[in-house]
Amino acid sequence: MIPIVVLVFISAIAVYIWLFYENVRRYPKGPTPLPIFGNFFTTDFRKLHEQIADYTKVYGNVFTLWLPKPHVVITDYEGIKEAFAKKGDDFSGRSAIFPQTVFQNVENGGVIFSQGENWKEQRRISLHILRDFGMGKNLMEEQVRDDFFCSLLKHQMDID
Image (cartoon, rainbow, N blue to C red; front, side, top):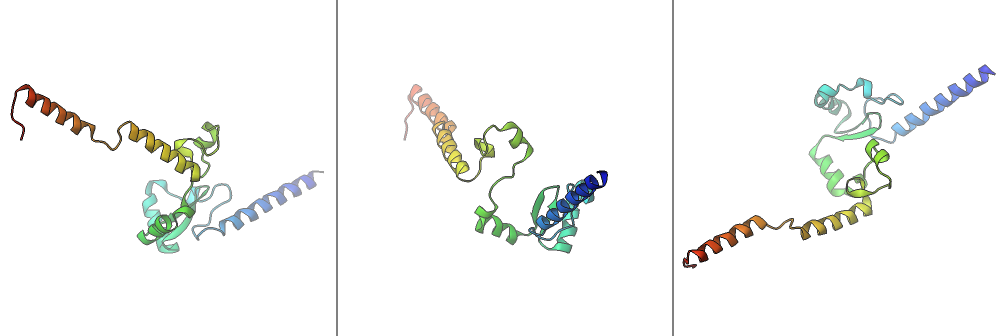
């Protein structure tokens, strides 16, 4: 009985590792990650900028770091411009991260965690409400101007 359990366990681990590396192939080249941990143990977070510069020399301007989820790193202006300006819809969205999954009752809800069409609607409504409360208006300038004219009228000075 024990050999069968061990065989099933080893087979499950082998399938997991195979599926993990099949998933790795979908992303741009980068340092080889470990299953579950990714590049976490090989990344020096205190000198991450230097390590990214080294990876750029080896893998080019676009590469993937697994921390432990995949993070595609773009290091040149043209690549960033293409990703966010020309293909913005392909790169928009947020992953389901810890705070969202734990503290959010509704999937894709709220102003901060929403995305896609829901985000556009939330943004439109939020900006409308903020404009109603005076965002984008220079209320202080208007108040100073009113006070200035009141003081001129109070002292009966000529206004040109």
